[in-house]
Length: 269
Image 1: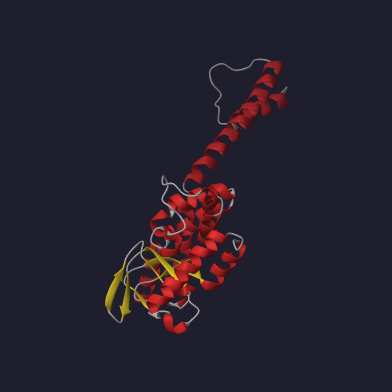
Image 2 (image 1 turned 120 degrees about the vertical axis):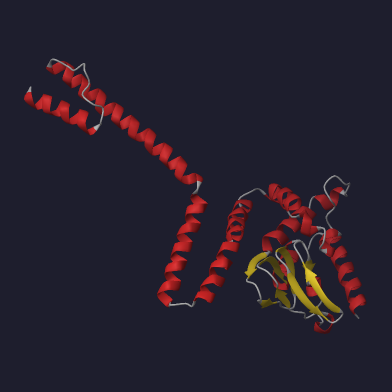
């Protein structure tokens, strides 16, 4: 009886239930109370664990970013970086938060079926699709009539192009740019030093469409200056060639691409 009574009081103390005004008076009642305490304590612990897990996942991205900033501050402190450099680095990472989210969204896009990838890519990226000349000639805006033969292949071509895009970010005052590369500005402002005059590029602007030309003298070699923090998509000619190889059986696609190259070559010449 003494051991059962000790176990009873220990169970009440560990589960923080409290002793109460009504207490068991014999050994059977104490055994039943002990079983109820342990079972209810296990159930309550599971409920608390599930709720805590749900709440912690609600701010998972925010917690990950805070951990990244803590590691960044520790790294800069250990390396003794001067305050102006620390400020530029922290500003860059604070501005790149959306870029990290975009990388996670690209992984979700890759897990979709080809048809869903095409629909999502067309509707979410139409802002830049309609500004790229050779893609605008292949894809019509949703709601317009297109040939049924093209609809079976063209969306997959656009999906492959969007998946082949590589994300890049640049800090303020950085100079970037390369030949035979298509650039799509997603966020920020960029400045070009064209021979005809200075030009400011903003979100949604596209340049480098001459990356399809094989003659280097016909391609522009302008560099871009990042006026603000930049997020861009870039497509190299090598990646574009691989996409075209996968769709080489689409004669309508090959014809339209060839026409675009010929017209662009004539204008540059």
